[in-house]
Amino acid sequence: MPFWIKMSFTLFILFILLSSLSIGLLCMRVIVHPFPSSYKPHPNEMINLTSIIPHKVVIKFTERPELKTSNFKVIDSDNVRVDNNDLKLISDKTLSVSLDESKLKTGIYTVYWLILPKDDGFLTKGSYIFSIMK
Image (cartoon, rainbow, N blue to C red; front, top):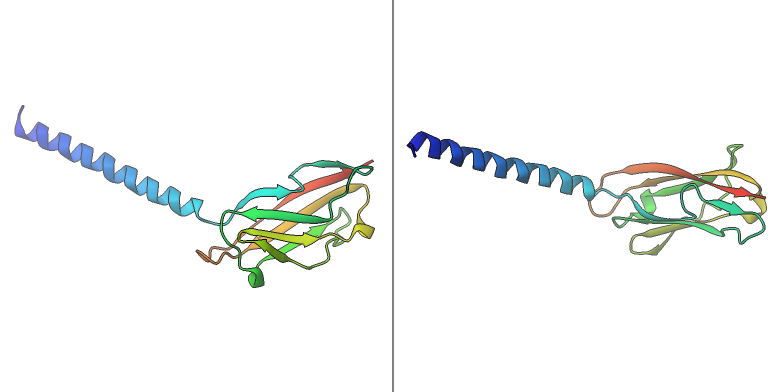
């Protein structure tokens, strides 16, 4: 086999390896940002008014949130806040806020979250809904 073909093949393999490494590093960087890994109540969950109404919203994240710079807010369809504004760190990666049960009625509720993690300092935010039905 001619030398130039061997060299081209070697450069091609090197290019593939470096490209794979670059893509892998980019994916790893994205994965480490703080995003929810579990929710309670769950996104799009329909809770029956006659069943047990949630007392709090709990979200577990992929990274450790900084409590002082993180925030949860739960509002109803009239844009009225229904949580008690008492965000707590209940485990290493889990935050919760209690709900004002006197404000909960049939309707759709939106949970907004804003998280600044201790690990990478990359601010993320998001929201999801759940509903209470008769």
